Each structure stands twice: as C-alpha cells, then as structure tokens.
Length: 82
Image (cartoon, rainbow, N blue to C red; front, side, top):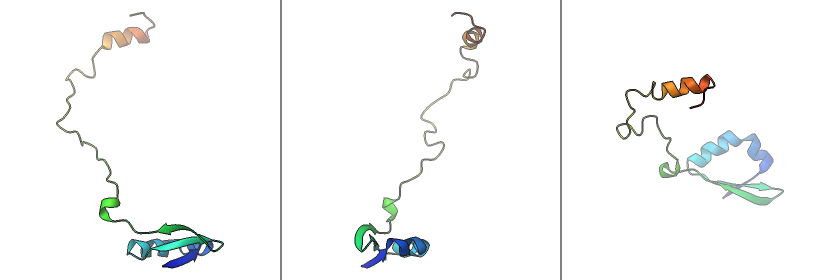
C-alpha cells in the first residue's frame, strides 16, 4: 500500500482523492509514522440527503392555519392579557 508524507498529500490531495475513489487506497504518514488510511466509499456508504416533501400525504395542514388563534395573537401583540 502506498504511504505518503502529509506534506506531499497536501500538495497532491485532489489526485490522491481521485485515486482512492477508484480503489487505490493509501496511508498518510507524519514524520514516517502512519496516521490515517484513505479509502474510497461504496454507494451504500454515502449518506442519502433528505428531500423536501418526504412526508407528502402523511400530514395535513388545516385550511385556517394562517388565521388560527388570530384574535389571541392580536391581543398578545397589543399587550393585553389573555
């Protein structure tokens, strides 16, 4: 397995990451001492991003959502006690 000094890894990081993504893992060393192993990810290792609308059809919003409790809110903004 390829062992690369940390300074060289910083200089060639883009190329090294691309190589790791294609299955060529490597080790980064500091002062000759191995510190980390860099390997590519498999498809199942990549976290999925949650998308907007993922709960479509599972919740409902009342038709009067924008006016619910409006009298109470107005009185609170006017400093009146409820």
